[in-house]
Length: 306
Image (cartoon, rainbow, N blue to C red; front, side, top):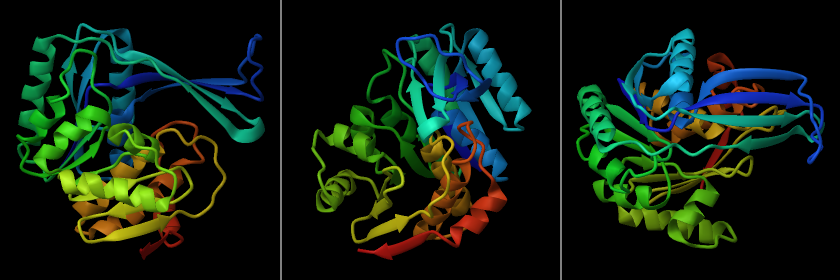
């Protein structure tokens, strides 16, 4: 069983334009609503990859109810923890000319200590039999930076983290199996300027030294870097047309977890995760991966030790 957990889902409004004109009235050619946010994207992608999985998610208000309905419509299994704080609403603007994507993000609101405790209790129950746990997304306002650390301390399965900043640094004390920041999140987390490949690998190794068994760093289409205490790899995706890149990192996490669940080794699993992320690029919605296409694309993903 794979459990995806997170406290910052979103109800996402995706608006399509031929071209945006900032400071003027812009009329969308198409509009779509969908459940989103990192934990939701991971959970739906896992379902589309036919992985045995369940999500644990904090939701609230009308937007939270909409998220629940959409996740159910996608066939994904979830345990919902109710909050008095409405689930945030985020907006994605897609411009056909130039394939420009702009994201307007509302931060998750301030939740109560009782709600954090209810989430913790649900998390402990759902992860008791999980062999893989993915914790994804930022924490709500008022949640301590130790919250994720304290959660994963209670997990017996391998833990994959898609978080950043102090939340990540604290969680490294529990020696997670794999952490997956993107390049800018890694730079922000360590307070470093990363100018080249050598500095990137040095920064990744700092996370290994502090407790992460594997570190995976993405940077758009510019390759994926992987480090452990002894290994360094570069993995490159195939080039494909891009409709919307939002959610690709979340889909990658789902893909690599599903491959690990099947017993594949770490580098092989990351290669499949990259293929899953690429399979999503043609869809404007953030979690709509294509399992069959990912299997084909994996043949074009290259990997090499450095």
